[in-house]
Picture 1 (tube, rainbow, N blue to C red):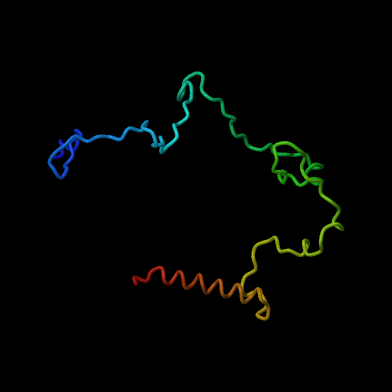
Picture 2 (cartoon, rainbow, N blue to C red):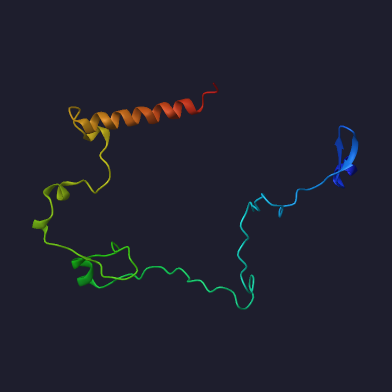
Length: 138
């Protein structure tokens, strides 16, 4: 039975017959392909004549102290061009210098009357609930 289906025989209402495939070049039919061909790379893997790709390099580390104090190093995202020149402190907003850039404050260090305290307390409670519910079976 499987061999008949394999070699093109199909079951019809009148008996077994030969499967006829539709002619794609018949008038009124469109020839449609499902997938595009994979591009052929001349030379193949590890042989001569392959496509040369640019190797990724690490960025150069600047050790010049004058350059480090006057420019924002690593901010330029383009391949070409200069790094951004730092402006005087008077041209930046005041809140920029009041930001906490150190480790985050602990719950005991915050004033309970502030929004930061309650946000951190809620975050700690969510973490605690997640830790406790991780071991629960159902």
